[in-house]
Image (tube, rainbow, N blue to C red; front, side, top):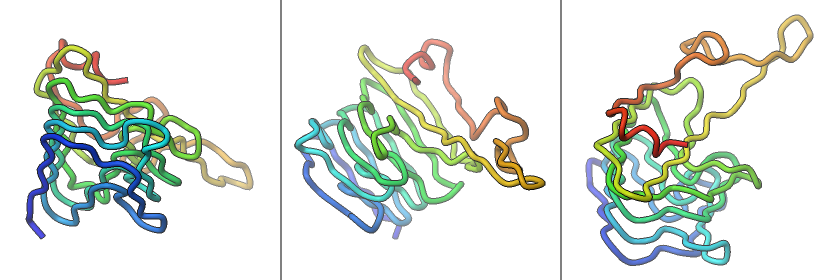
Length: 174
């Protein structure tokens, strides 16, 4: 608990947490800092897990300022997954989080609609790309399945979590 995992170069590929979270990196209550290197890289080098195929942060902070997280495969979450609503995610620099999937659907940074996770941006460099995935939710109401956002989010199209940054940094989000 409370430790820091730092990745600045190298490659993490073909790791698996088939029944759990965090195929390449897992933090229960600390920080993960990715400033360089490659996590995944190609379909044949994919890391895999239930959620957080590349990186899973149960509680704590994730800082992504460089490197690439690509072609990782989750079964019920994204390449970057969070465990609870106190997680803080920080994106800046030339970080690339793209081409990751959940059962064939693009899911890069996976945020549940009921999350209060905070996303901060510190200005993106050339070529930066951060894919954010928020799943559709449905529930049964009077015998009919209807779309909804969890209680904290209000109606469809309402904001989720918090995203802060300058207007010039936001175009890197997709």
